Image 1 (cartoon, rainbow, N blue to C red):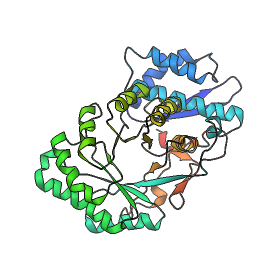
Image 2 (image 1 turned 30 degrees about the vertical axis):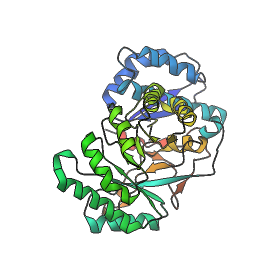
Image 3 (image 1 turned 45 degrees about the horizontal axis):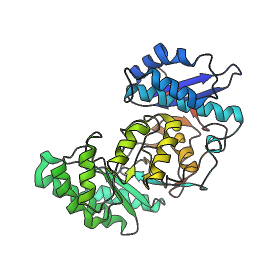
Image 4 (image 1 turned 135 degrees about the horizontal axis):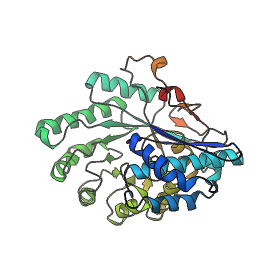
Length: 339
């Protein structure tokens, strides 16, 4: 993870972060974007976003340049909240809901007994929805299809009919495989099928939507309102899943939400974290967010799991709400970056 800290003349510091390509992100910020920020008004968040986006066009528009811009944008929002003495969700217009449902995102193919025990544990902990991973794709043939279906059947049998279940294909399918696979999956009433194809293969996403009653989702690897506009225009997805650490930060996340609302599309951000909690609390288009619990079969002691953030809100009975502290309400755990 790459962390960006922005400090004002008043000694107020805002923190932002992103993942993937951290060395390249550091180079972009230190050698280019920092000089466009120093001396500017930190409260001019949208103007700074536009200036930085345009400055990175020759090598950006997607990928690590947007990761860098996202981290800077998050730091500016954190800073703005601290300067105003308000949590970020208040700056976004205030909460539209008291708390947010979270879904458990895990359920790897570890065998029927383990995965069923894991799914039942999530229900006992209050989760009303959970997502599993598909291990097999076109290269595994009919046997792989059967194994994928069995994985879904095991989870559905464990949780019953009143819990929502979803599945992630990790961009590993092609259209013909997906067309066959969704017919096997429809009886299990998936809440959505995630990332069946590579992110740029919008034609396959659009065709698959016409082949199945299962809602189709994706977008964690998409960038900016311009990328999501293409998804919407092609009617490629029922649910979009921007990651605010990649797509352009909170500023761009709000614009993406506006597009989704205008087109009747649900927004469920990829991944967990304080940014997505504040975002979901203030956006009507966001009904839930993702959370990564430690599976019941994992024997790693809790004490050995080093948190990325201090004071990060944790779900209780399948729901979470944002910190009321100024800014994003967390501090980065510097120990995990030591050395």
